Image (cartoon, rainbow, N blue to C red; front, top):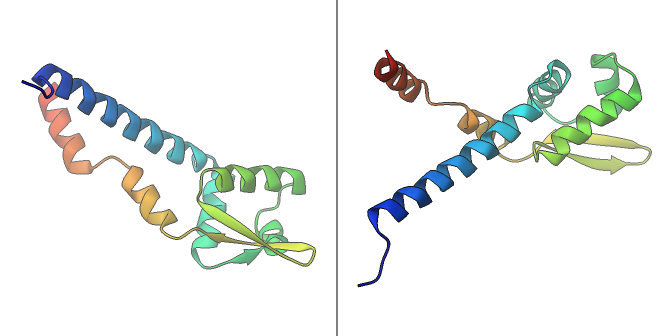
Length: 116
């Protein structure tokens, strides 16, 4: 008889859930900074030139570049070069991915009831 035992199946499910939670935590950590959260908010209104972002987020240019890099590496934004400027925009489904990374309130409420 081949297949996985109940114990092996539970282990695989736990590893899968752990990987999902790690990915969600990594995505949420990318926006867990006030500047990056502000940038996501600005870009949710539509694409913006880095020059406009610089005016809306008054921080040094090198710091703005760092925050944009973190969001790019998280797959939340994309930059497109236009001459000497770069236009930034949210990636397709970025806000949906962030929303999906948040805990389900109903599940959290059930877990709180169990703990009490």
